[in-house]
Image 1 (cartoon, rainbow, N blue to C red):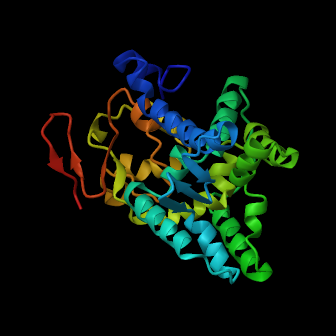
Image 2 (tube, rainbow, N blue to C red; image 1 turned 180 degrees about the vertical axis):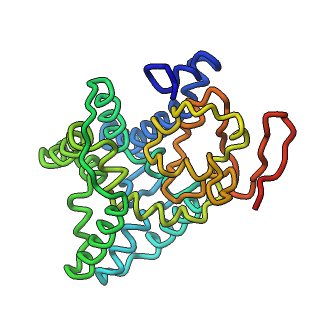
Image 3 (tube, rainbow, N blue to C red; image 1 turned 30 degrees about the vertical axis):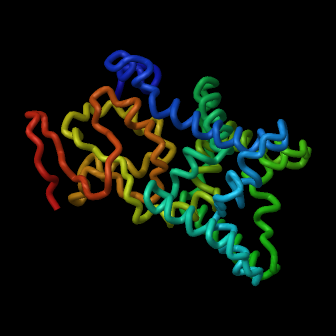
Length: 297
């Protein structure tokens, strides 16, 4: 265990503050930048992007559609228009490359709130946490699809915190903010990473897309790990790290778990540079001698 009070302190000392927060800064810039693109239209009349994260039209030529919404629509026997299907195909192709749950850490605005709740939870020293199995999110996903088929409507989008947050920013609806506040308070007082890590059906859906994604977090220097545990402390899905880090059952130095969000925080906080972004085909390990070799298969 690291003797530092906060995860990443060793990385800051070794690499400097900026290098130890590089991916976090880029991720926040992405989340806020995407949110701003949606808001400058209704707020300032500058329509770069029209719509929301369910369906948008960028610069009047690029359609982007949430494939999860398309699936619900089809189950509800509501045939999407060709433009919506094209947008869904583009989004699917993109997340097959970069990882489905990259949506959660690089795009989803609710992640800003849940990360803020976790930050405040740590600062307040709140230790207790409810226990909900992580696979519960897949049951939630299944229920939203069953409800769509049974009701003939995309019922989930009426209470989806992502959609509610957009409505609140666009129209100032009180109920929308009540749902968003409930998610924040749940993560703050009830369960660490409770919503995104255990319940959100949107994240569950995108994890299924990410099973075969090209972009992965690799561990080229896993032999240099000093067991400081900082990566586990900052990871929203810490269960994905151990198999690759400890070569459990011959696991290569790649995080292949579908629920890795590719947030890059493990890269940031590691003072030994154990982690880096790469592809699923790169399994080169750099031992302590500094001579690269291929991981055993």
